[in-house]
Amino acid sequence: MRADITSLFGLNVYTTSGTHVGKVNDVVLNVEGGEVSGLAITDINRKMFDVPTMGVIIPYRWVVTCGDIVLIRDVVNRFQKKETEEEE
Image 1 (cartoon, rainbow, N blue to C red):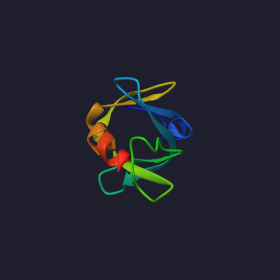
Image 2: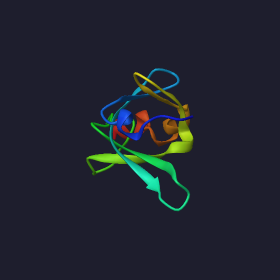
Image 3: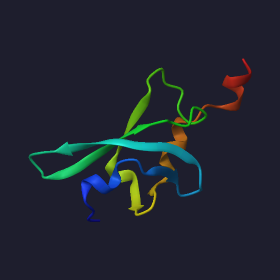
Image 4: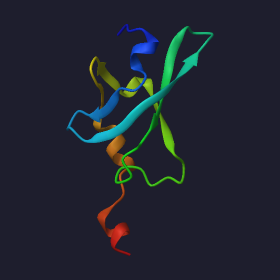
């Protein structure tokens, strides 16, 4: 998958099942390998990520495709809060 790095900034990120994850704020580069290794996501969906930070970094290998949006695998759902934890 080839794209200009600058075209990724500000794109909304969704899972393949349609869940909004957040927005691309930055990219993580592997300078030695000359490739993108991750995406820094801000405005994250707090129902998916129970983290005290403003964002998360997801591995670029999770990206399925990018264009008007970035589509990632549903593997991110394993980080989703469990309903029982929210009720406690």
